[in-house]
Image: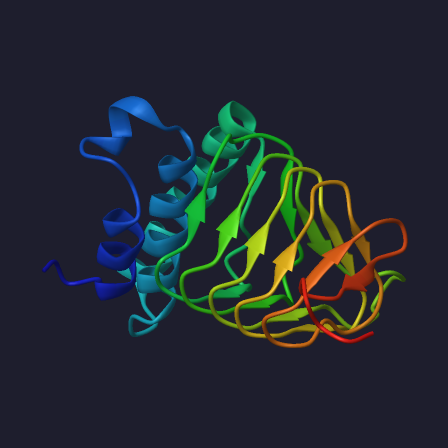
Length: 173
Protein backbone atom coordinates (compact mmCIF):
# COMPACT_ATOMS: atom_id res chain seq x y z
CA UNK A 1 0.00 0.00 0.00
CA UNK A 2 1.12 3.51 -0.73
CA UNK A 3 0.58 6.51 1.51
CA UNK A 4 -2.79 7.12 -0.20
CA UNK A 5 -5.19 4.29 0.52
CA UNK A 6 -7.97 5.99 -1.48
CA UNK A 7 -5.81 5.96 -4.62
CA UNK A 8 -4.82 2.35 -3.94
CA UNK A 9 -8.53 1.48 -3.86
CA UNK A 10 -9.01 3.34 -7.17
CA UNK A 11 -6.12 1.44 -8.75
CA UNK A 12 -7.50 -1.90 -7.55
CA UNK A 13 -10.54 -1.39 -9.82
CA UNK A 14 -8.37 -0.84 -12.92
CA UNK A 15 -6.51 -3.40 -15.06
CA UNK A 16 -2.73 -3.75 -14.66
CA UNK A 17 -0.67 -0.76 -15.86
CA UNK A 18 -3.66 1.59 -16.16
CA UNK A 19 -1.56 4.70 -16.84
CA UNK A 20 -0.69 3.22 -20.23
CA UNK A 21 -4.20 2.00 -21.03
CA UNK A 22 -6.82 4.31 -19.53
CA UNK A 23 -6.62 8.08 -19.44
CA UNK A 24 -9.30 8.32 -16.76
CA UNK A 25 -6.79 7.20 -14.12
CA UNK A 26 -4.79 10.36 -14.87
CA UNK A 27 -7.67 12.55 -13.67
CA UNK A 28 -8.20 10.44 -10.56
CA UNK A 29 -4.48 10.52 -9.75
CA UNK A 30 -4.33 14.31 -10.02
CA UNK A 31 -7.50 14.65 -7.90
CA UNK A 32 -6.02 12.41 -5.16
CA UNK A 33 -2.73 14.35 -5.29
CA UNK A 34 -4.62 17.63 -4.84
CA UNK A 35 -6.58 16.25 -1.87
CA UNK A 36 -3.32 15.14 -0.19
CA UNK A 37 -1.81 18.59 -0.74
CA UNK A 38 -4.94 20.28 0.61
CA UNK A 39 -4.56 18.35 3.87
CA UNK A 40 -0.99 19.55 4.44
CA UNK A 41 -0.03 22.33 6.82
CA UNK A 42 -0.31 25.82 5.33
CA UNK A 43 2.92 27.30 4.06
CA UNK A 44 5.01 28.02 0.99
CA UNK A 45 5.43 24.33 0.10
CA UNK A 46 1.68 23.71 0.20
CA UNK A 47 1.01 26.87 -1.82
CA UNK A 48 3.55 25.84 -4.46
CA UNK A 49 2.14 22.31 -4.61
CA UNK A 50 -1.42 23.63 -5.00
CA UNK A 51 -0.27 25.77 -7.95
CA UNK A 52 1.38 22.70 -9.47
CA UNK A 53 -1.84 20.73 -8.85
CA UNK A 54 -3.85 23.47 -10.59
CA UNK A 55 -1.60 23.35 -13.67
CA UNK A 56 -1.68 19.54 -13.83
CA UNK A 57 -5.45 19.42 -13.34
CA UNK A 58 -6.03 21.86 -16.23
CA UNK A 59 -3.78 19.85 -18.53
CA UNK A 60 -5.39 16.53 -17.62
CA UNK A 61 -8.89 18.02 -17.79
CA UNK A 62 -8.15 19.24 -21.33
CA UNK A 63 -6.68 15.89 -22.41
CA UNK A 64 -9.32 13.65 -20.84
CA UNK A 65 -12.48 15.74 -20.67
CA UNK A 66 -12.89 14.80 -16.99
CA UNK A 67 -13.58 17.47 -14.37
CA UNK A 68 -12.98 16.31 -10.78
CA UNK A 69 -12.85 19.47 -8.64
CA UNK A 70 -10.60 19.45 -5.62
CA UNK A 71 -13.52 20.47 -3.37
CA UNK A 72 -15.66 17.45 -4.32
CA UNK A 73 -15.54 14.62 -1.79
CA UNK A 74 -14.94 11.37 -3.64
CA UNK A 75 -14.60 8.09 -1.77
CA UNK A 76 -12.03 5.41 -2.53
CA UNK A 77 -12.45 2.98 -5.39
CA UNK A 78 -13.66 5.40 -8.08
CA UNK A 79 -13.67 3.77 -11.53
CA UNK A 80 -14.20 5.75 -14.71
CA UNK A 81 -14.79 3.79 -17.92
CA UNK A 82 -14.60 5.45 -21.32
CA UNK A 83 -13.23 8.84 -20.35
CA UNK A 84 -14.65 12.05 -21.74
CA UNK A 85 -17.29 14.65 -20.97
CA UNK A 86 -17.48 13.81 -17.27
CA UNK A 87 -18.35 16.79 -15.09
CA UNK A 88 -18.63 16.66 -11.30
CA UNK A 89 -19.80 19.69 -9.31
CA UNK A 90 -17.47 20.92 -6.58
CA UNK A 91 -20.04 20.28 -3.81
CA UNK A 92 -20.84 16.68 -4.81
CA UNK A 93 -20.23 13.82 -2.40
CA UNK A 94 -19.49 10.44 -3.99
CA UNK A 95 -19.17 7.28 -1.89
CA UNK A 96 -16.92 4.24 -2.19
CA UNK A 97 -16.54 2.03 -5.27
CA UNK A 98 -18.67 4.09 -7.65
CA UNK A 99 -18.46 3.68 -11.42
CA UNK A 100 -18.86 6.46 -14.00
CA UNK A 101 -19.02 6.13 -17.77
CA UNK A 102 -18.51 8.79 -20.44
CA UNK A 103 -20.74 11.80 -20.50
CA UNK A 104 -21.83 11.61 -16.84
CA UNK A 105 -22.76 14.90 -15.17
CA UNK A 106 -23.36 15.18 -11.43
CA UNK A 107 -24.21 18.72 -10.40
CA UNK A 108 -26.71 21.31 -9.28
CA UNK A 109 -29.84 22.49 -11.09
CA UNK A 110 -29.57 26.19 -10.28
CA UNK A 111 -26.63 28.45 -9.41
CA UNK A 112 -25.65 28.02 -5.76
CA UNK A 113 -28.22 25.21 -5.45
CA UNK A 114 -27.65 21.92 -3.65
CA UNK A 115 -25.57 19.18 -5.23
CA UNK A 116 -26.20 15.41 -5.19
CA UNK A 117 -24.98 12.93 -2.61
CA UNK A 118 -24.02 9.59 -4.11
CA UNK A 119 -23.76 6.67 -1.68
CA UNK A 120 -21.48 3.62 -2.12
CA UNK A 121 -21.38 1.17 -5.05
CA UNK A 122 -23.45 3.28 -7.46
CA UNK A 123 -23.09 2.54 -11.18
CA UNK A 124 -23.75 5.27 -13.77
CA UNK A 125 -24.49 4.52 -17.42
CA UNK A 126 -23.19 6.65 -20.27
CA UNK A 127 -24.52 10.23 -20.36
CA UNK A 128 -26.45 9.86 -17.10
CA UNK A 129 -27.26 13.18 -15.44
CA UNK A 130 -27.91 13.60 -11.70
CA UNK A 131 -28.97 17.12 -10.84
CA UNK A 132 -29.93 18.98 -7.68
CA UNK A 133 -30.02 18.07 -4.02
CA UNK A 134 -30.83 14.40 -4.55
CA UNK A 135 -29.52 11.27 -2.82
CA UNK A 136 -28.63 8.16 -4.79
CA UNK A 137 -28.81 5.13 -2.49
CA UNK A 138 -26.21 2.44 -1.94
CA UNK A 139 -25.93 -0.01 -4.84
CA UNK A 140 -28.24 1.92 -7.17
CA UNK A 141 -27.87 1.76 -10.92
CA UNK A 142 -28.50 4.80 -13.10
CA UNK A 143 -29.22 3.86 -16.72
CA UNK A 144 -27.60 5.38 -19.76
CA UNK A 145 -28.98 8.80 -20.72
CA UNK A 146 -31.12 8.95 -17.56
CA UNK A 147 -31.87 12.33 -15.98
CA UNK A 148 -32.26 11.97 -12.20
CA UNK A 149 -34.06 14.85 -10.48
CA UNK A 150 -35.29 13.06 -7.33
CA UNK A 151 -33.92 10.55 -4.82
CA UNK A 152 -33.16 6.98 -5.90
CA UNK A 153 -33.53 4.35 -3.14
CA UNK A 154 -30.75 1.89 -2.31
CA UNK A 155 -30.43 -0.98 -4.77
CA UNK A 156 -32.86 0.57 -7.26
CA UNK A 157 -32.43 0.99 -10.99
CA UNK A 158 -33.41 4.37 -12.45
CA UNK A 159 -34.02 4.91 -16.18
CA UNK A 160 -35.59 7.51 -18.43
CA UNK A 161 -36.10 11.25 -18.74
CA UNK A 162 -37.03 12.13 -16.08
CA UNK A 163 -35.89 9.04 -14.20
CA UNK A 164 -38.35 6.45 -13.03
CA UNK A 165 -37.56 3.51 -10.77
CA UNK A 166 -37.79 0.08 -12.36
CA UNK A 167 -39.40 -2.68 -10.34
CA UNK A 168 -37.24 -5.81 -10.04
CA UNK A 169 -38.52 -8.77 -12.06
CA UNK A 170 -41.10 -10.70 -10.13
CA UNK A 171 -41.81 -7.82 -7.74
CA UNK A 172 -45.37 -6.78 -7.18
CA UNK A 173 -45.99 -3.34 -8.49
